[in-house]
Length: 324
Length: 264
Image (cartoon, rainbow over the protein chains, first blue to last red):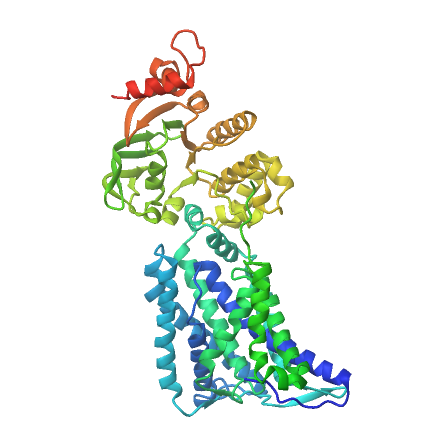
């Protein structure tokens, strides 16, 4: 996934603006993916390796709901993009339900067992969901009906894809929503559970319910980010294809860099990684003779490594707040 | 009234920690449960509040009844709803959350807005220190403030019975006195208290009744005033000589401990 082919802008400023939007958009995408990891990690202390598979399931749901069943277009009128967003919400909901089922069957019985076992279970889940989703998607990629397709508009001389704006907007909504949610009673209960499960139980917090909410939210976010990642500039031209299952792992540097348990970290980590990747791709392009091609895929990991050397818990990851 | 009858608790299916423990906490009273490290005081709390699961513990015998209802098989959240809340040993405040958010978690089983805000007001009046620091991160409060927050958090569920597990642990004498007054205040407003302590002096000075526990059993019980005067209790828990009231040296206490065990 190399992003848009380098479109030559008229001058240096236009190139910069164009790269800026591209970086912001890719960063937003990473941040969305990272948020899914963080929500589940915060509640259960487990990296959910099945996020990618859930993302693929989400794109498949969207394609079925929007293209095959023509929901909600068969019932209501109005502009196509409104239909699409409604279908997006439905697909996210369907994936959330899938997440709930998975949590209930495989994660809930593991409460209190070693975290490592739980992480390995999610790895197993990843394989299972991916294989089933592969089978569903099959070898022919399915169309997602993204309303703006690959269209672009111009700011000055800079070409900006509508997908960029959509991804930035979506990330904004998701992060604002999460931030608001964490201030609610349920959100506070969730953070309390993340901090000290036994003490949370002692307050009467239903820890099982907290796990379920985290998984549902994480799965919904996986679906949304999977769908956005399939949009023209990044994904295979608006199709649900098998590649979707692997995209989620590209957000791991963002998660680790930002701090596994920090929502702000997911946002900042995502943006840093996105910027590093896109700007390196744009401005180091003339040195391919020396550094070879495909280096922009490596840049996120280099940034992550350097970041971790300085802050082992990630930029916003909490080591532990404890008064001595 | 809380009744624990003949309770037996086993950890990891092998380690027997409580062996036929029986205590009663009558409504409106303060009952002290005393004992040395490892006697099983915290296990008793876990058994009453449903937290044994977390530690691979199991009740193998006996019952826990609150107002006639068996509660030993309920989930922790159901037990909180039924009216028992505990202040855990070591305070266990949610250090990353603010003071107010900690209080929110305490009132999580309460769904009535009015009653939540009344409980919140009550906590703020009881602990003016917390009222000044409502938006402060709990992890940065002092030990005494954290203990107050932990008690305040427990009060948010309007418990009928409050269990306090070593509330004086690690606090300066002045703060211990303050916590003691708070416990009396809470009790006077109608909440029964089960006070688990190593600080026998403090606990017995405010309790109505006291139990002394050793290796998973009650070895002695009686009115708190009587226990305070009991020679053995004085010697073992208060470090005093039976006659004069001078402090005994630690060395002698250890010797005494080797020589004599509590037996009922």
